Image (cartoon, rainbow, N blue to C red; front, side, top):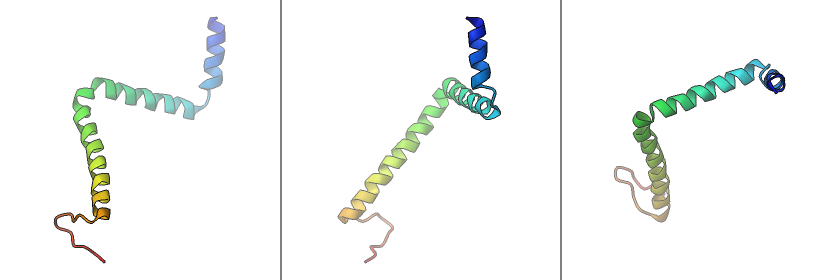
Length: 73
C-alpha cells in the first residue's frame, strides 16, 4: 500500500510546476484559514464594490445620472 502511494506521488509530483502549484495552493488556503478574520471584511468589500458597480452601470443605461458625471449623447 505504501509503495503504491509512493509511486503515485512520484508520477504526479515529479514535475516542478506541479510542486509549485501545490505549494501556492497550500499557502493560499493556509493564509485564508489563519487570517480569515482579517481578510473577511476585505473580501466582502470587494464583492460589494463589484455588485454596486454592476448596479450603477444598469442604472446609467436606464437613464439615471451618477452624481458628478455629465450625460453624454
